[in-house]
Image (cartoon, rainbow, N blue to C red):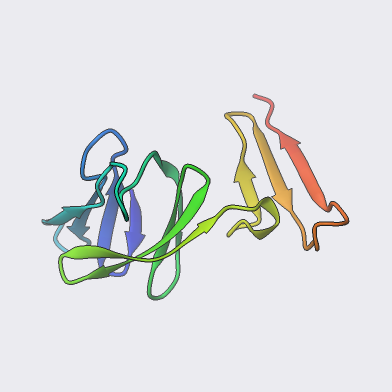
Length: 121
């Protein structure tokens, strides 16, 4: 679950539609949107563990493409789709798998400034 504007957003990657929006004040269901498919503006494999918010939109990761999304009335609108390039990761940190992360610094692509982390539990 994530917060965006006055919504609680649930990303249910096994459901279609993927996103359900709930009123943050009274926890009432508002709408669902974001379909899985192969058409334009349809998601392929949205990740439920990647979510970032700005004042007007939110970002999710779907098959190595970062989608910028905003709500318009009771639906979502895709603002931008950007292939993820590790130095440009939105939080400068990308999960590679369950135990490996990469954190990127500023780079022009010629000099590698990435730090790899391994989580040990």
